[in-house]
Length: 294
Image 1 (spheres, rainbow, N blue to C red):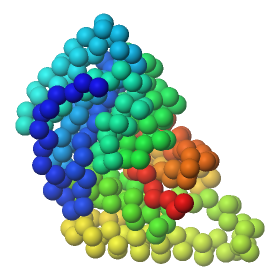
Image 2: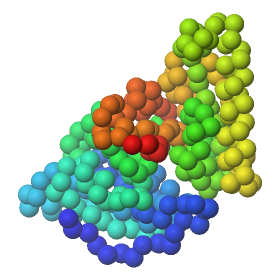
Image 3: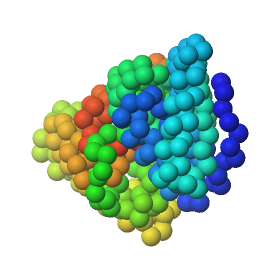
């Protein structure tokens, strides 16, 4: 790998923030360009460096020259809008997924476009986008939606219960640096509880009440760690969790979801709900790895 040695910016000043780079993959496509500028804005908000990566999948000399040209143009584009941002450039002969994972290390954030072309091949969800989200051990953002979105003042986090506190902290930081509210949305399917663990149809109201209580507990815990942050909660019942989450992205600045990576790589790498949301969301989607117990 080749990269320059531009010094990194200072650490994230928000409580508990990560200090690693925001890594943006570029391939010359319009979605990758949009993702690059989103990544630059995110790096600036958090006081983190930006690392621009082009993965060619080959070490051919012509590919290397074209890659370095693209990296230079990308860095110039960032400099126009974010002149004070610390930026590094990295050309990799590897394929996109391992190159982005290596560039992010253990404390970075990876940002990719919803689809693309060029050095990354076909950057479609289901290949690179999903591949990075499914296997990364750091947060991954897939930039979707309109390039120019009105500021809604709301970051939405799709949660399941009180055990989601650990992976919700990045969502809280994202809302805090934007001056936005954090909206905790839990979606449950009533029929899934019928006939399980002795639950009868008459107990559905009780199940809903437990979800409401857990959201209040979670909101209180987040509020205690992030003073001044407005935290709202919503409990919705419906047949399609993914559909309701996608609806919430219409007026959100960012949707944050937790992704559980199974121990030893056994089992589904990414859930069907997350998969559907990544395909249909109307705003950028951040996938934060959940902690797991081996």
